[in-house]
Image (cartoon, rainbow, N blue to C red; front, side, top):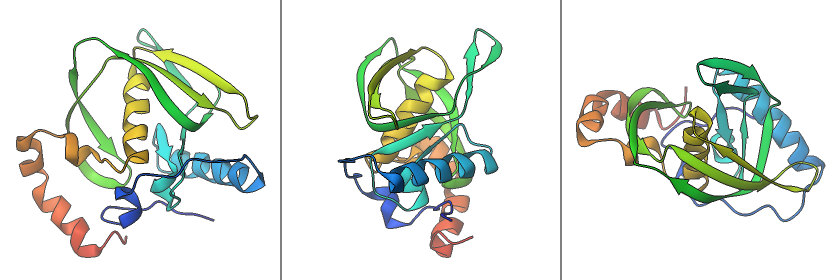
Length: 174
């Protein structure tokens, strides 16, 4: 069973490799990622966050429609690409499972269209103007080796400096 990888593990800073074929290993990885995401109470999780440098992430099965949560299936995104980002950048507080207890304001596009391949091997396209749009951008950042600490304001980096240094001293170990 895989486990959550914490900063400063090097896999979190590398651009992940594309997935060439969907086989039982990729299906098992996706199932393990969903399990870890749920156990850690996250809404998304990228493969580098479980130590695998592959371009894949998962999201939880809840969407937001206005102010109401609506059940939807857990989703696997293989080789995702953002096709469109739209609107004024919005700053909202974000956290990250690989950076426990570190939160800060991150500016992201409010509207996103994403394309990816599912476990069935078929390409799909989704559009969102809510929390999922932010989540997709966050997870794709992970696939590119970018963390929220790279996108935070200087003030938020200063506020989180002690917690970040403590993580770095532990070398990413619990």
